[in-house]
Image (cartoon, rainbow, N blue to C red):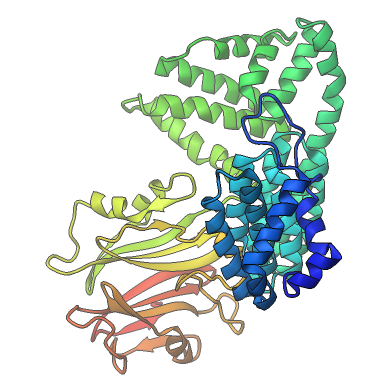
Length: 519
């Protein structure tokens, strides 16, 4: 709509787009510290000024890159206009619309987040609407997957505030994104999430009469039990629900809830409380069971760091790594989490390498891992006197990735945000593994091959794939025929491959030979 800016202003189309905020603005609230949305007259005056300053740029902004450049300019100007509420709001709003038109989710989200912090608008509704528009214009399968995952995250936020109508609508939108992402697992995830939203919406509707009863009779045991189960087992809000369970008629839940409300600092008591909730979970239905296991995990983790060792700590670790981990992973998937899984990791150089997969996976926090901290923790030097690198094979957002991280490099994985993945024209820099279509089921498939050392690596995947004969790869002398991507450093050939459904990593020092698969 900005390609013919003057005509748009004359016809009132752009003015209507910028001035119509009734679907996104929230009613003014005394407790809301944010500024109210400027009135339409003030916004109209600012828009006329924006036209005077940027009219020619609007007319020329025909491509996505031109629209994005202008969006970033306006976003920067908005940052300098905070003392002018109307100017601040209009610049952010137009920057957001330009970014959405350019297919750049990251910039659109920046504009929305600033608006949401400064003004009484509904940022979640804005993002949901933006995802709907971005999904319609998204080109690549990876971008569509990113949008679907962002949608799953937003659905979780909408559910937290009990906005089930908006959650349902967004769920319908990302069904399309999931289908076009060409990822069957993503489609299943979205379907499962939408079904979960329906169950949550039904539970929310069912509990309304109960909450009304509590307004008149705050200590009613039946109403407290029903409301407590809803908040604790359905919403996961134990801070609100535990006090209700403590007044409920179920003796077991009442006693455990009362313990919850006491100050529990002893690790032995924390473990016992975790065990008690674990036991209750074993007799519960599937939905309630998952919630109870997750709550048991909170008590186990509080106690874990205080326990010196022994069978109790071993039991806790086993439960956390077993059933609880499965539930946490499933919940993370439904919520659009990153699901970072380290498949393999090697630390070293040339012919000296150390396996670091276990240390790397153990260091994953909040679906991220800081590589430098793990490297600093290695006590053994696998290649003394040489500049080293870490080769990491990992799965993130259901994509297989390879990262080669030189020593002394401060980097975390994943090294790209979900918003960037959901933006047109963005890609994972030298990370995403493109699997060949013509790979034999269960046979040898070369996923990635790199030649180099330390900071210099050459992608030789296509050459390695073309060298496969009869389902086998023979490398008689690693490095022969390749250019030198790392002068002054001893080099190696790294081959990431799958065989019989498993991913493997082979590292061949320069001049050495290898046969894959090795058996």
